[in-house]
Length: 170
Image 1 (cartoon, one colour):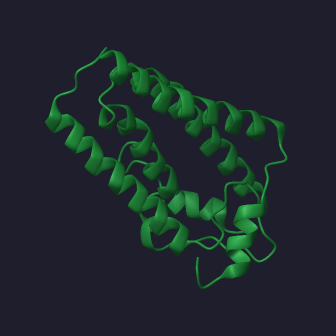
Image 2 (image 1 turned 90 degrees about the vertical axis):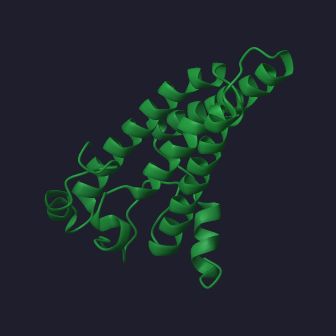
């Protein structure tokens, strides 16, 4: 990203224009801030939960892995963006993490979502996990619909790379 200032500027300035994605991003932002961060903060303040320390440590490691995956995807795929759009010169990436799953960045995001409440010592924070994961699933399906329609070679890639985010599962 540092070597490509145009890419960095495009990623920073890009904004979603489709209403369903704007709504999804807004709800996800709210759930992340208040559900995954705010509720655990209150949970810790008032000692509603007690997570075994080993589970907290494992969660920390899995969150780190999630961030490493997301960072690696941003370094590997210069078309990765917060906005679902096909660029004029975009091509299908089929190697690296994209040879294993079609959406490796979302795998990293799911790890972060799933384990943040546990890392923050909160069972109550897990309430936001299911709706956030559902939003990610809908985003994946919407992204695949758009990419299949607008990106040459994406349908063939989907036939070759069977799994969306979790190998041998989905």
